[in-house]
Length: 325
Image (tube, rainbow, N blue to C red; front, side, top):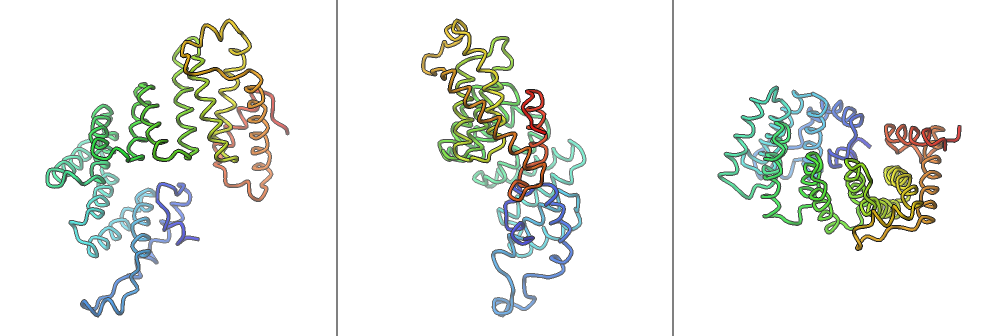
């Protein structure tokens, strides 16, 4: 199990698991995957595999997440010795290590300057470009980070990860239409990504919160994307949670026919039928209640939900008086 997790992308590992994995660093560090014999004999007597280096890299990132800087340094040097200081991936990992150890903005600025120097020599190093964006975010330079991402996307327009990050930055500064556009680019690359559908829905929903009168077109689009997210994943708690919020907003608006006529200025977005919205609200309520109940009972197959999300679902149902004790 530990090896399987160490072969997974670090971003997909929750904090508790990252801690468990980082605690396995000492025995992994003590067993070198390479041979001390000279080449080409090292090829014959080495236990090195591609997986062993993936494990070293992911363990390094897990150690940084949990504050084990000493083990992270040893793993970084091991990777550097194997692949060389000029290896693009090693350069990026060294940057991540330096970012993690930076104690203040001044030290982060030094990391940023090193990234700038690297890009002067190699403008096509996209992993460093992405780390440069991360540093700008840490420094609070959001507009600069947005500019850096738009430049990166000019070179790599199908980079879904960068589009998603650009969307998050636009949302942070309240530019909802740009945030939605950026995330729709993600859906062009991954049309069946239920989490992306849910995030687009969330952006449409949040865009209505700053207005005194909720936008019917925006809520209708939020309903569409939340519905698509649970169609793609029938156990997607966030999808049902969002669906519950949106339907509760839509039902009173759709119940007032005059309000529908006033709100539907965007003729391209047809409002849903009231009866359909009521059925979706019932579905979301039923599914959320089932998840909360089964998770609380510790039923097998229901323990994979994030506890914080289950608590939020319970609170939402409690406010509506729809939770079964």
